[in-house]
Image (cartoon, rainbow, N blue to C red; front, top):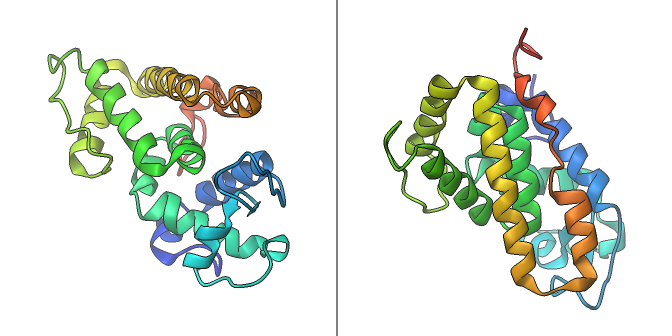
Length: 207
């Protein structure tokens, strides 16, 4: 059965996990905000006015339906960048990709994953290096699966999450936006518990 709020391709493969991840984004982003210090301008449910307009919403941002925001997140931050394929391998890592992508851009969060994998490959000694291009495709997925074979499923997820957090924290420090740093550090770093690395889309926690 296809959810009316989640594109069919994603729903068929990882729908429940996708809904949980988007719900987590909503919890962090909150409702309507119009912070003059934020270059994104008005937002609601974390969706900027520019993105809402791109998706055809022309009403007041205060009234942006949550279902519309959910559709935008699923299309732009899960399906289009290929993150649903990562969710199928590791819901915890997929959540990190999506949440970081919402905050810093999906291309950037994808590059953080690719850079982490290259470091964890030990310079290509354990598995081939991947091209750091922000595109999650066969090469990146194969590298992560190779890391799982090398380190074990749970440890592969834990290591990757840690290295993504390192890069994300460094990104925030470079922004020089002290008004936002507390919220970023509190809500966006270490936000996916390592204990969730045993989770599976189909089977729940591994024994």
